Each structure stands twice: as structure tokens, then as C-alpha cells.
Length: 399
Image 1 (spheres, one colour):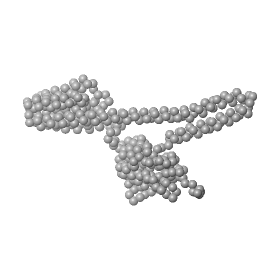
Image 2 (cartoon, one colour):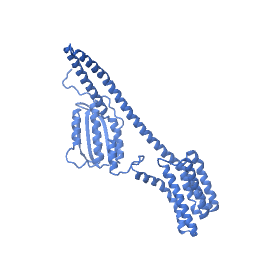
Image 3 (cartoon, rainbow, N blue to C red):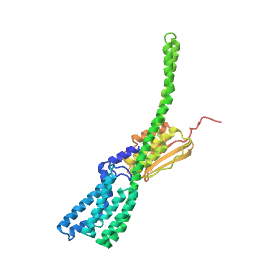
């Protein structure tokens, strides 16, 4: 259910939630530009100096050329570091060194307006270099800033000193957070794959246990029937009848096993509901782990299907901003029931009368001995499903 809703959300062009993988190369580039481009604000001073400064024509051309090379190296370094194939360590060190040299040369030749370039050197050190290396290269960048400031503008260098240190060490934290997030995402994908593999193995083991004995017995009795057929047709017929009985039982066992695997679980649907509503930008109020002691499997499966259909309708058709899911036990004259209610503050869709989804849910709940109510309330739309929470009472028995 969650994958379907997220895919529909993707088709509508909705924004991606924080932490999600970029869906397209265009989305990936937009994210990189957002993270990297925000620091380009420090270029305002060098650009203003080139546009309005009193440099010679040669100095202005050299300044524009040096600034272009500096920005190109900076963007290339960070773009590759945020991608799947970062530069080798030696090339990274060479590029950061060239940035530091360019910042120093431009500051000493063109003036204090260029001291802000050391902020980019500090950002690159914090984002790209390993943590142990960044801890000494960032203070080294600050030292180079002070030395360049002694030749240009000491007060401007002191003003930038704290910023260079803070911005560099802040980027080390951001870099570690990004790397940890990537590793967690990979670990989550690995766990999901392992869980799927384990489920396949469990299904294979169960089918082997179910069919191994039955198929062996069918093979044995088939051989016996073949040997008995010429001289003892009555005994051969009995063996064939046994084969038919074993085959039917094996078919029943397989169907029960497959049905058990396909039956939805209410706890899993509640977790999927939280993810689906959050991804759709709907505030969700979901109950904790449900207490299903004594609840028949048919009742649990019926409520799980009901919850899935109701949440799908909320996301696709309601247009609401909040959804509340409640799950409570109630004692009625007919015995204990488990009641599930899903209420949203949307319009409830534009259809007139119950749709195919509600009709199907009603039939499913009736098979499990439950009921369904759905309709408008004062502040939105509410769907309520009730199923037996225990064995149905035998109203004909008397003590």
C-alpha cells in the first residue's frame, strides 16, 4: 500500500520528504545546487571589488580568471564528493591546496575584499576531507587567513577568523551526518533484502515440509498400484483412492499456507499507514501496537484490509490534512468486538453513494461476522468497522 501511494505522490510531482533518495538526475542536481550554492554569497565582496574597484585592466582580467578557476575547483570538488564517484584522496588534497593558494594570491594582490575566499577553503576541508584531517586543516586555513590579513587588512581578517573556524567545523558535522544517513539507508535496504530472502526461505521450508511427505506417499502408492493392477485390480483401486485422498489433503495444506502468507497483519498495516499519511503530508494520529489476544485471524485480516482501503481513500480522494485512526475493544450484547475507526477532515470524495471499495469491504467484513459504517461527520468523513474480538457466542446453548 505504501509503495503505491508514494508512487502516486511521485507522479503528482509532490516534494520529497527529508531523507528520501532523489528520484531523477534533475532532482539530484537541484539538491546539490541548494547545498553548495548557498555558500556563494561570500563571492559578493570579490565581485563587487572587480566591478567597482580601481584595478588595472590586467588586474581585473586576472581577478575574473582567478575567481572563475577558484569557483570551478570548489564546485567540482563538492559536486563529486556528494556523488557516487568522489575524487581520489590525492586529487582532493591537490584541489584544496590549489584553492588555498588561489585565495592567498588573490587576497595579497587584489586586496582584503578577497579574504572571504578562505571561507570556501574551510567549507571544502570540512565537507570533503576525513575528520582527523579536517581537524587540523581548518585551523590551518584560519592561520593562512590571518597571515594574509597582516598584509592586507588585519581587522577584516579578525572579523572573518571566527566565521572560517565555525563554518569549517560545522561542515564536518554536516558531512558526518550525510555519510551516516547514506550508510543507514544502505543498511535499511540490506535489512529489507535479507528479510525478503528469509521470508522466501521460510516459505520454501514450509512448502517442503507440507509437500515432501505427501509427494513421497503419492509416489509410493503409485508404484504399488502399478504392481497390483494386473493381478489385484481391487487393491490397486484402493491405492488410487488413497492417492486421491492424499493429493486433496496436500492441496488443502498448500492453500492454507499460501493464505496465511497473503493474510495482512493489522500491526503491519498500522505502520504502513503512518508512513503513507506522513509521505502525503497528512498529520497522522495512529494507535500503538494493538492488543490482538484472542482475536480470530479472520477478524484481524478483515480490519487490516479495511484500514488499507480507508487510508488509500484518505490519501487519494479526501483532500484532508489530518487523519485519526482509533482501535478499541468494546463489549456488546453479541460479545466482545474490535472497533476500528478512520476519520479525516477532508471532503470524503465526490462520489455519490458507496463506491466499489466500500462495497467490497462490507462484503469482506460480513464474511468475518463484522459490520461497516461510513459517512460524513461534522468535520470530515469517518469510517468505522467492527469485527468479533473472540469466539462467537452460542446463543442456542443453555446451562
